[in-house]
Every structure is written in structure tokens, then in C-alpha cells.
Image (cartoon, rainbow, N blue to C red; front, top):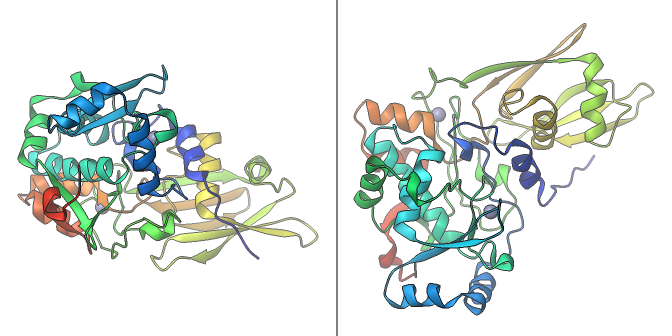
Length: 339
Ligand SMILES: [Zn+2]
Ligand SMILES: [Zn+2]
């Protein structure tokens, strides 16, 4: 029983969800597995940078080249303006200040750590859930610009390197380990946390009934259309389900990653069907009842929890310390790194 992690699987998941996930679209944001070496990408990126990018960087202004997926064009924008512009789509412009600031630090860290992610297309980041949702600089509001300004230059780091800080909609009470979500070598090593702040939020608890008659359709997408039964097979060290076993009459079976099951179920029934991999399954005569916690991958910042903590008076620093255990918040220039 082996199940290989599939490079690019999360990308497929996100492609399936694109456009359907309100406003915390980053809940399913993929960091993607097997990201190319960042240094190699940076070198390549510099080789292809257009003159306006170099002129702005020479003037001391950090910029990011954003690939607009709908048109294929690349838009060069100042980094800090980019951070202010992604907040409305990622956490909602109406979030309280400390939560916006925490999200700004995460968004900036991501943009720094993943610079050159789309070097093949002459860009740093795309404007979709694959990277961070960017709908244009005009989407920034006074509140999101204030959050970017209040945290200007601050990033999350670990071992002297900026991390591609993960975040998601609702953890539902406990975190996922980043390494259980992505098999990228550069995924940060964040210690698990428990969270009581998001428990009253929409999506903190969910159920999904999978009729037995629908199981073959799901199993077919996982390469095993003969399947007629399923069971939880394994849990990760973060207590989330890591694998399920599909079984067919006659004894044939296949073990599949829980993340793959969630991705394929989302393709068929939408993102709100199978919201996370933190669940139990109860077999019933007519099918399987999944009862779960949280919405999204569960690693890093819990946006619903961050909003609740900000409302009860916690600071941006306290929120970041709660959700990024093992990382520190530091000025980027203290790391001697280029933005
Ligand atoms: Zn992207
Ligand atoms: Zn939470």
C-alpha cells in the first residue's frame, strides 16, 4: 500500500475551485509541490526582467511582476501596493486592523519567498489562487493600505529565510502541519496549534453525505471505478486524515491520499462539500456521512481565528505568534535579503 504524492495535485485542486471560493480564496491556495529552486528562478527572472522592472528596482522600489491569467499579460507593481491590493480578496477588506496586518505580513512573506515562481512566463506570481488573488491595484482600500503601511517590510522568517507563509479560511480547532499538506522542500516547519477563536465561524463544522451510488463516480476520478466501499486508513501526526482506503467486491483495494479525495470531491460537488481533511466517517446503509472540522488546508494563519482574535483585542504580533509557531516576524532588511 503506497500512495505517491503527486506533484501539481494542489494546483489541480485550486483550478477546480477557482472562482468559487469567497473571499478567503487563499484557504485552498496551493504552494504547489516540487517548486523549482528559488535561486535558479531568481537568476532566470533577472535574465528576463523588462527594462521598467529594472528601472524601478534601481530606484530602490521593490516590485513584483504579476501574471494576469485571463489575458496572459504581465503587470509590474510595487510590492507594498501589491500587498495592500491582495488583502480584500484574501481576508476581506472589512476585517479588523490587527487581522489585516497579520494577513499583510503573510502576503508579503509569500510574495518575497515565491519571487520568480512564474519565471517561465516572465513573472513572479500569478493573480489566481495558485499564488495570491490579485484583482488589480485599485482593489486596495484605505484600511488595507493602512495595514500594509503599518507592517511595511515585515516578514515571517525561519532559519534566517523568509517563509512562504501559508494561510487558510478556518482551521476548525487545530492546525495542519505544512509538511502534511505540501511536499515542497521549502515548506516551513510550523508547530501545531489549537484554536478556540474560530469555532463559532461558518465552516468550522461541516457534514457531507456521500451516497453509496455516487461513490463509483468519485472513485473513478481516483483511478478505481470498481470501488464500492471506503474507510479511513491513516492519520497524520497532526491528527488529520492522511489516507482513505477504497475497496471493491472481491478484495481489490486502493489507498488514496485524503487530499486527493477532497480535491476530486470538490471537482464534482464543489468546495463546500468536502471542506477539509479533518473528519470522521460513519458508514450508513445508503452511504457515508463525513463529519468534519474547518475549511481549507489548515496550515498557518487561520483567517477566521485571526479576525476573532483581532476583535477581542489581540495585536497583529500576538496573532502571528499564535499561528506561525516556529517562525519569527522580522524586518526583511535584517535578513540581508532583497525584497
Ligand atoms: Zn501562481
Ligand atoms: Zn482556527
